[in-house]
Image (cartoon, rainbow, N blue to C red; front, side):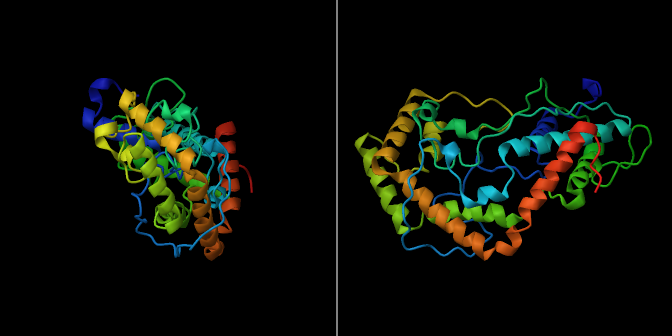
Length: 327
């Protein structure tokens, strides 16, 4: 893009880079599993009318978290779809920027992020435990070399902060990102999925921890950890222990390797989860909460699969030819 001497200052550049790489500027609705979860027992501020069940049947779960499916998974973009959708946003944005007289090099080859539920219950395998807890903070990153670092002028065109491009053409409403977003939303597409989906997924995680069934299994896990020499009230606590994992990374740099102590705690965590049966109980309670909430919000959720399918057709067309399919 424009010579480095004309680029924004370091602090501004890092903020722009974070926004671009995470899709924040495009409001792409990808999986949230890799991000921080609500603290134990605290629901999100958007209630979804989810009464706590007294007791639910416990369903066995497989050894790999990638095999776990919760009801809200069906109403979200898969990691592969999210990567493809973001790539389509960038492809359309590049085309728009070139039309305004700028060079454009946003990456259009992106790695899929982790499975929706891969980090939901913390480390659950020895392979995960070998990386401690900071592995849960890693985000999907572009597979292509280099990272975007827009100038102030380009930033204005990207987000609609300027009226005209370098060649004098008008900048579309919302900038090139806004234009890309609208293109993918056309013909019944919907990049931003209904808020109720994320609310149910987050609330089920938080509210499940208030049930007597989950609290009982957490107490057993905590007692098991004490026997191993570690004092934590529940399985969400180690990942939030600053003395163990340090400060969370900014999201723009590498995640430091886990210390020997962090790995030891994670290994004990995995062993105790298996020994007392944390995962089947916690998963079963969450699944029940989400199933019941999905039934109460059926009218809002019913159009979502078709909207996802249309959005992905739009994304495929954008990546293949830079245009959208005919109706």
